[in-house]
Length: 453
Ligand SMILES: NC(=O)c1ccc[n+]([C@@H]2O[C@H](COP(=O)([O-])OP(=O)(O)OC[C@H]3O[C@@H](n4cnc5c(N)ncnc54)[C@H](O)[C@@H]3O)[C@@H](O)[C@H]2O)c1
Image 1: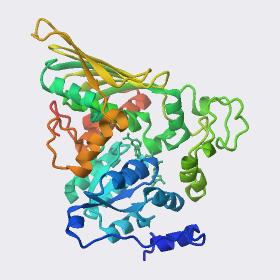
Image 2 (image 1 turned 135 degrees about the vertical axis):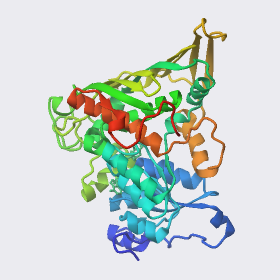
Image 3 (image 1 turned 180 degrees about the horizontal axis):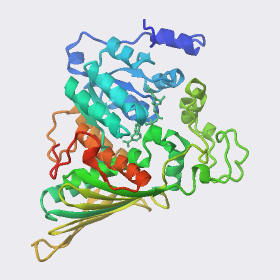
Image 4 (image 1 turned 180 degrees about the vertical axis):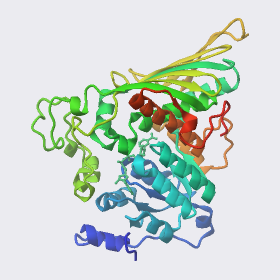
């Protein structure tokens, strides 16, 4: 019996499911068997779409031989109820994280909560003896990043940041080519990333539209891109100068309402979306918003939106490389163009876009004065599963075979998580101040020409 959290039975009472006759038996965990002891006990905090799918249901369906998912936590009791049903297994659920950790004693805490509270959950998990698997971004600002760095030193637990963008086979191939010296020393990188109108709309509708929750797309989204670049070129960012603009959404919009279900402008708004047509999202979010005020179909023209739609940054790396980066978050296509130029040649990729492809072409162009290689187009097929086949490869490493050799160093830790968010944090500060921001001034991590992790 818990005070702040609740057992299945208490929970069903509070949410009224018990009264409706849907009572299930208590959690059945075979704690005695050797097989069970060989499994790692894991728990999830944050039962939104990410938590209940990739780390909830998928974990139970695909990794039940190696992982015991023991419990779920969220501040929204209604969403927890839906999550419990969706994930299956009659798992105990809690609204208080510390209580869950002390009662269920997971060895690993999986953090899939809102970005601005990741640091609290990571630190609370470590304090209670857990290793951590956390979703990106590691956190949203430099103060919270420093707290995580300090906690890792204090508690000595392992923290993995799930940068699934490193795992699609063609991205691993790019890493391999750079590592194997195909382009020599990296001189500069161009990355122009695009997300579509509807993808941006989803961000604007939710907490992602406010810097205080998601750190802006500079952090929430670009953490993936900056991490990939840091990893590909194997160096730390050192200085950042950036510009950004919000031109279509938030207070720039012509009208506004409370949310799409309660709006006078549904006939004219190009972003009108009827969440009630999606039973899953309606049940998980709209029907639970009275508990915590989290509105999933919020107005994209609400005044409080303070993130940017278009972003451009110049980054200098500690190894001397330059990065020209842009994120156009109101675009006709989802994907990016990438070029990595080195002393011996250039790698070029145009990834994503339309029509959908079943793989990507990596074009290698040698600098004939310094390279004996020939021009080559290397086609790499996408794998099956989410994120161009990256998710299952990453998940196997996380949940099935944690000791698998990692020659490309795909698994990311705290330093990687911090270095990737700090580029976005510095970009925000640069836009606000007009100054160039030094990464080394933000936390006690010193940028290295060659990455440590
Ligand atoms: N790697 C990827 O490709 C990828 C894709 C999607 C989401 N994500 C990440 O996964 C995380 C969750 O994303 P989502 O789309 O499911 O978001 P969501 O808003 O649907 O879910 C977040 C959940 O956290 C809960 N929460 C908020 N504050 C809390 C607190 N203090 N304690 C406990 N729970 C709390 C909310 O109630 C909500 O249920 C985010 O960090 C996001 O960046 C990563």
